[in-house]
Length: 247
Length: 289
Image 1 (cartoon, one colour):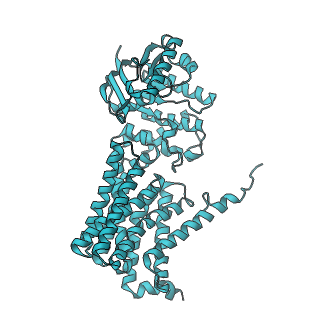
Image 2 (cartoon, rainbow over the protein chains, first blue to last red; image 1 turned 90 degrees about the vertical axis):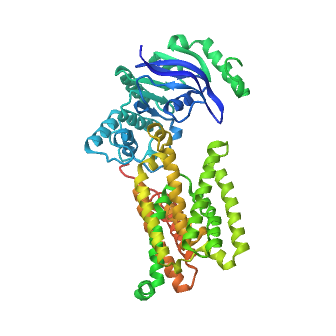
Image 3 (tube, chains in turn green, red; image 1 turned 60 degrees about the horizontal axis):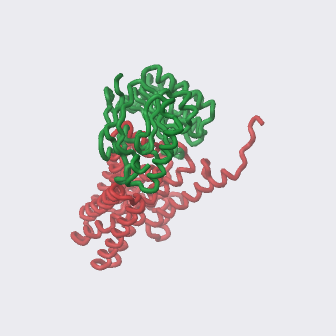
């Protein structure tokens, strides 16, 4: 089994305080993995480490056959300034960055790809709408259209179903399933264990340290969930000595 | 009548034409930077940077008197030092950028006023604080036009990363290493325009021509290109009107220009078609009930 991502004794954090500690595991290529854990478990931090926004305090991240150019990242909606005067087509076109770079022109064929991506998420007709006028679900569809354009082998999703209705969630899950069928590696931070059990074959449970990683039915046990909560509560009270030792 | 009121002051007096050219150059260069400052919620950062350049200009004045080159270089060095120091403190400590910038600009401002007050006259202090738009010489005009050209070129080159850095910084960081470069180049353009602007409008007023037209444009346009276009028009219109008011009523030119830009902002706030207060109060007609 080829490895898409490997975490080798990885510690990530902010202001020298670790948010993910001593993570040691591998994500298989072509896998569909949910990253779960209590609030403050380091799930989003892990994704920021993979895209390079955070530099490891210790250890390293291995990319297997990938390089950082093969990664597409869906940030949390709260990271995006919805008041910025951008239209749907402007935001989706950002997915062409790797082809056009900071200065290149969007050519006719690329405009057609943008239109196809917008159609694939069911937003044809919304091209000229400002992103500030969209609902949470429509905005998430726009961000998925941008991911489609990026056409990356490794897809990182940070809470992709926050504030979306069930119809939108079903549509977005279908896109994720298609990526999985195409052999892309998908890593998604999620809170809803029911959808993880139904749609994600593998799960990585974090509580700053790794609690468990493997087949979803083996990871999402009540013992693991209890242990994860205990570890995170210990971290909240003594952040400098948190982890398995404190639990 | 119209000739006497509007055209004659510029047609008859070289100093008015020079002032107009200087103001148009500042409007073209500084206003697009102001639009991005506003969109990045950094309008007060512009104000802080405007204050930060004062000690550099004051030291330049002490060394060489009212020398364009010395005061420009001094202002640039002081502005960039404050931008870099506050950026470093933000990244190295838990202090947020607004707090570290405020700390450095207040130190810088106090230092500047102290230097000018102890070693110069009140006239010198007024020159640095409020500018001398009616006394721009050839060298000053060349400097203002060069800064405007550089600024327009810089914004054009940076446009896409700047938009991404404003709207979705995490995404820019995930696809490109240009995030930090974009941020510091943008701050450099901001300092450069403020240094250019202070020769004409003074350190305290220069930021006005950057921010007020941008804030007013928000009520007329909803695209970035539209915002920049409207803001530049407001800035140029304010410059022409302010200079004429200054000429006819013997008012200080810098404050007159900024005050007109302020009136334009208030009018836009009230009557602007995109979210102006009056526009919002008028009920929309029902279509196809």
